[in-house]
Length: 113
Length: 112
Image (cartoon, rainbow over all chains, first blue to last red; front, side, top):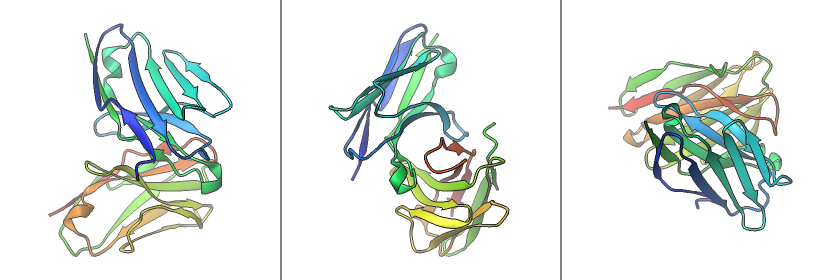
């Protein structure tokens, strides 16, 4: 059972454009929603995270929007750069379950110069 | 650099064999998590340890086991290996439960 669904699977955006990745979850007990960035040959690196008591969080060019009632959250990458080309994963966890991360399927982002 | 060290980076072995993957968490982190990344299953949680004790278990096969030692490093043991066990195995660590997890660069396991 896939508890976190991520879309799209891949995305091509022009340099300077906005990349938008969406995730939907099923388990309303989730209380922590991080986004990870992964480059080939590397492990996932934490980008930004949000908890359900906040509807939006911004760190630099990265913004998470969170809709608790719709059980959806999204990552917006503003002013996308070629260096942002990577695979992005959303995830969800709950502290009562040891904070084990349930990951979405990933989105491969390509930023064209 | 996340500060999480995994060894070896690559491991090639045959079916039926047993291997041990090692993880050194970031300095000060008490919690260690193991994840498997494969093309068909994506990133999946295997098991978590906190200060030497098992805290949570995911879809970990009975052929797999792990432990966390007093110095907080952790080992993942995979036995009776099958072709389908070929994957990237990641270790992550955090200061405690509910804190951000930081991943190592993984061990790529190839079963021939």
